[in-house]
Length: 352
Image (cartoon, rainbow, N blue to C red; front, side, top):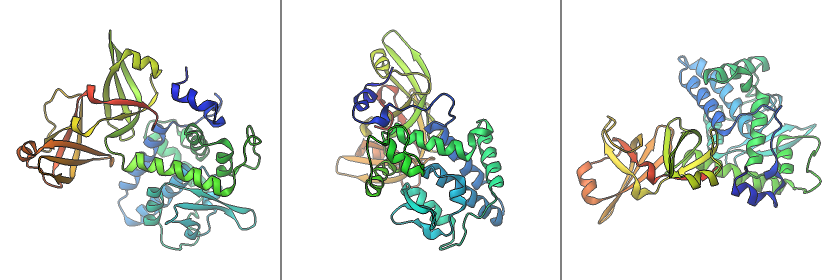
């Protein structure tokens, strides 16, 4: 049964009612995040500088396919880093002869590519396609996926499904992917290049907020549900790799049509977050114990705001009284823990 949110959009946006066929293989957002983490771990494990440079190139190829949906050959054919607009967060894909299409990428991806690749490098991705595929297969197996699910074509298809499920209109996705034929609903709507850039920019900015800066917000998929007489315990496996547990009413679980694999966003208000100081996990009855580092403290006359940054970059904001602040004696850089009761967690569909 579709969620109420899906039903609300179906009548106005054709893309919201599309679903990939059972024959099409694709990765869901959590699997894509796991694959990206596997690439990052592989890059971090590089010992010698020359090995790291080689891995950075493969990682950049992955990021570009992951976020542009381009074909492997198109990425390998990028003639210069000048085709990447690091300020405008776009990539020009194609050739002078066949024409270029400009695709928006999240700001954090543009920053990573700029850091990894030399400025104005010629043929930055001059890598054997077979070698690239082998490395993609290895990373898929490293995170527990069948190696074929790490192929460039599967990642490209997964990006298309991801954008369609974010209610990006099908004709825009087709233009972004560089399809030569319009297909299923192309005759319904026509989008100019300006329209495409505006709409895709909206989605990529939202993705960047989710992955890099959203406070007290955890996106993941349902891994376990324990129903009770009145309430249900729901556990998410988050994009950051840690579980988040919530307790909601059975009515809410039914209304959201929850089940294993359902994509949700868990949110918690700052006054409901408790903080424990120190590197050792505290003994607590709170279902959620999240390890982080104090990155900012704002002290007012009566209250204090503390920002913890978790290992995946997620920020957790907590509010406390000044007396509580005085007791903890926190400073920037200190190890600390965010403690969140399961009853304090609010669940929302997708990334809404």
